[in-house]
Image 1 (cartoon, rainbow, N blue to C red):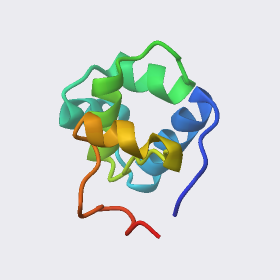
Image 2: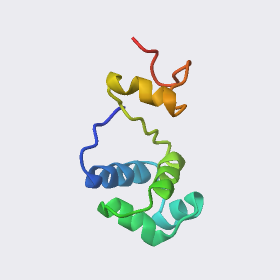
Image 3: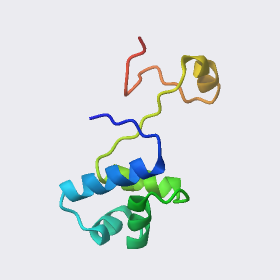
Length: 94
């Protein structure tokens, strides 16, 4: 299921719902993701200053994939930065 995220608290609520649906305790998830129990609490409360890299690791541990829907006007710059792949793992460009 794809969900539109517009606020940090959305990420927190989604994270919490997925964790609970998998019956994982916060401290166990922290161990799995290599972070503290406090970090899990901060994410689930929607704290806006959590470490992005650690957040992405946490989401991966929960099976949550993160994609960015980038405007077509950015394609040239994405190529410049080596970020546009010929085989797009998410979509084939329409």
